[in-house]
Length: 291
Image 1 (cartoon, rainbow, N blue to C red):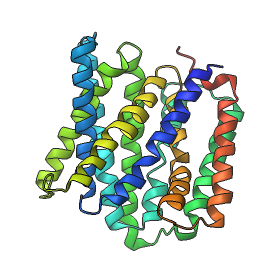
Image 2: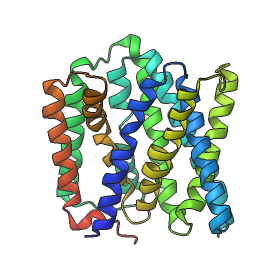
Image 3: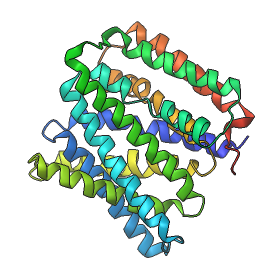
Image 4: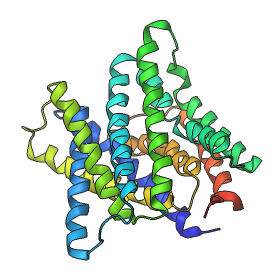
């Protein structure tokens, strides 16, 4: 078992879990603007890093276009999630927006013909059950939320496809080379969406700009880059399962920072989710068969 990858995925989970906390404090910044600046800042810093440390170019021309497609899907993931929040309950959008591991599992089993250890599948099942327990009290599938729920499901599908593309591209390309273009493509997609929706991208205060820089560095460069590094060695289904722990970590941080209460569903559901993730990481089949 490669403990370095497991540690990186834990770091990724902790890093991305800061995102909702910081985003919540940016009261004057629209959600699409937050996503745009997060992706743009992450991309710009990686391009600057590449200039000084000579990370080079992509080795395969096809990977260039695949990465742009993955970036568009990532940008759509953010936009669809925030669109879903407007049209359905937050609990619906949050739970249905975390179904990426389910879609990647379907892709891997039925398209790539990969076989998973039953303990891995059981761990994934536990993680989903725990996530449902966290949001299940407010989960509602009534007819008036159909469009919002559909957007949340599509947002998960976009992220799943992004991870599937990332796995293939990362077999050849360097993490920095991949993510600098990925984030730039996502930022460009979000920029177009912001223009269409007339969403302001400027005019924020100094605190809000500092928050955007934080989001571009910690959850994006540290968190997401750790994920995209790991996806070369780990099944996309396993990688995409780790963010299921984000709501739990974010809730704990919100308790200490904002004084928000932690319900019994968080304790029970969170424990089950983490138990599932621990079970997954204990398996020798953690790493995909193609590597």
